Length: 237
Image (cartoon, rainbow, N blue to C red; front, side, top):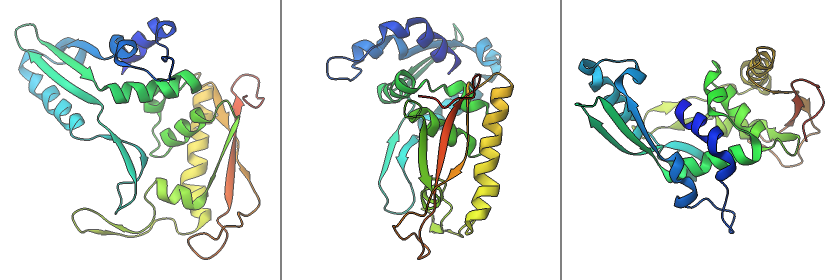
């Protein structure tokens, strides 16, 4: 992703949507193909097999762009890598990213300045998702989400996986979600601002109860996350 980010920053003014607001193969082509040497992966020739295994695993694990893999719920998946070739004589891996994953990144980056490098820098399990949501709604200056949606997004409800194993619900109480998920994620983003990694942070506001009844037979209380500029402290617009 470091090579992708560097190349995108170098040519981003040339990568623009077509008349239909979409990125076709012509506009995406400079961002699809990469040659990466063994030394860039930090390995010697005798350990190329470790990268081969890792790339194979990545190709077999598509990203969940939206929805959920749980049960029969709707889901949108995108494979990050479409092609890999290794030349042992040159000690070079040729890696081609899928057009769909590059297009997805451009949609986030062009409109919301999403950075995969920042997303990957977070240690918290849930922080990258809060960061992505913030990037999606940066121009609006805030985003709203209720506790039931958080439970769905992070697979906190009880469910049975593909192998038939049953998983118990986690954090049934909204206070637990606040303490274990929301506040640690917001604190980590705030720390990233102080470290100079991220240029915005999030504030938490609890909104009036949603009139729609939630999963436990009571209103699902929504939360709003205003985006604040990391330097000025004013709300992003």
